[in-house]
View (tube, one colour):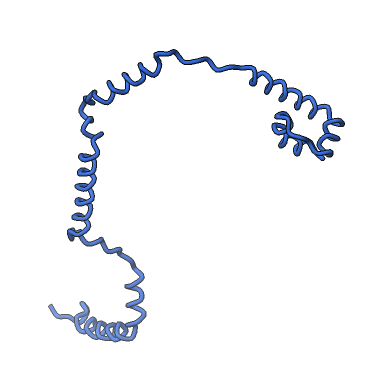
Length: 153
């Protein structure tokens, strides 16, 4: 038997419930648990002697009068209409209608800017390498005909 088990059942023991033989043996051996049980019993004895004060005889009368005043008083202020459930429900309905209308309306958005990347250009060069090589041959022929050394001015 350990102290944690006895502490879990301490309130039952203090209330006068019967303890098992193991718990009784532990309380006889452990002075800390026995002291704590005595403190609980003395606290419970004090609570049993305590009596709650009686409310004043006019408490109920004053409470009912105050409740009538609060029921008849109209709330004042800018946001007082917010407290009324009909108006709050209407506002919620209008907000829901607005959300639905926004969802149904097709809003034209500008196209997203295209990202400029060198990868597609390099892929195009790799795929069309033979074609670009034939352009070099054409350029060599044109360059020989229009070269400054052979051109007559």
